[in-house]
Length: 237
Image (tube, rainbow, N blue to C red):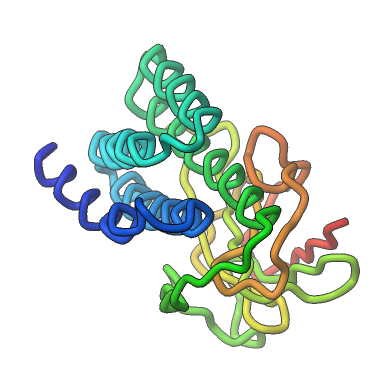
């Protein structure tokens, strides 16, 4: 099983390997997007009950990414520290959650560098990744949760919205992407307490949001959700 995971990770990160000799900002962006795919595949396994499989996907993706980041020693150190922290956890569920958090932190660091870089990126447009769950029309929602994401009063299209269950082991993750008017819908969200994290996706209309919204450790967005079609808008500042 582990060899299959390694092959999958190499396929996901192949574009990054091919760009290793090119613009380092382009490489950072490719690695960030590859880690997003690693995260999604690991979350699918994790939420499907294959916790160890999700953990191995996260672990393998981070190890491969670390090897490609020789030009970013501070991010390599962040990955090494996070992997060591996960190893110290007693359960596989906790190990997986720590690495889930670590992937988010690494992607934040890589996005910051891309945004601050002096050069315009010349990376071919990435195909828009299909949403994990089909979005229903707002008027049809009688379960789950819906709302809008706004930054300084303006709707944010293409933002990644993750609801992470709080106080539950193993935690469950629900993910979707906002539409052009900042609307998101998670129709199958179960009732419970959640930490919400939000960050720009590859096609986001906003290139940067405050880092505090990007990880469950720092996000101030904590809610008890009845999941009966209630509306939760996020007015980010």
